[in-house]
Amino acid sequence: MLADLDDPPRSRTRDLFLGVLVGLPVVGLVAWFLLPGLAGMIQGNASSYDERLRAEDAYMQTLCTQAMVLPRDEELCECVLAIEVPSLDCRDPFLAWSLARHHEACADATARRASLTFCSCVDTVHERVGKAADPEAGRLEAQRVGKCLELPDAFPLPQIETLMPTS
Image 1 (cartoon, rainbow, N blue to C red):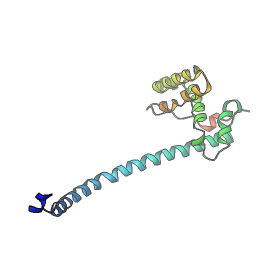
Image 2: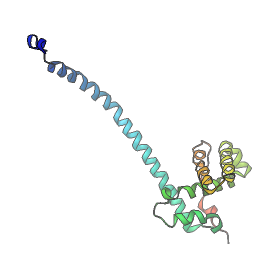
Image 3: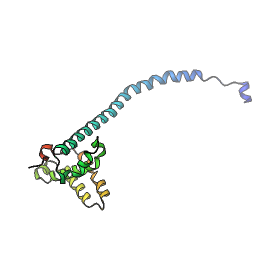
Image 4: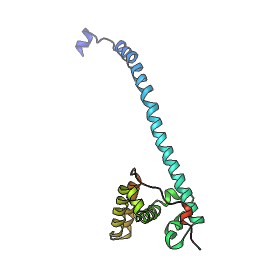
């Protein structure tokens, strides 16, 4: 403190001003190039997720109102018909239903040859669900079909017309 009386410290205002003068354009330039791409990536993923959920909603609601077969669709349709947004609230019954439909479709030899990786994944998940000790463990195992659906050779669910009950 006594040394500061004899030789006072110099002001840092000039250094701070130079730092801001050099740093602001660099930060602004980096932000200009990075932020729009990052925001676009986040919004793009959100919109594709939203589109997929809307398509699942439409599929489930159409299935349960026009093509329901009670023994096959009872658990799924109980949930779908009771709520407004089934793709969010009925995810577990839908994945279990989807697993059963994909397992049935993979039983066809031509479908299996065309989508060998996907059908192998579906068979493995179906087997694990069958070996589950309790319903909760089976529900958790059925959620793994979501990873199978991300495979490149995955095929979509059957058209509603093919699921309509035959009289």
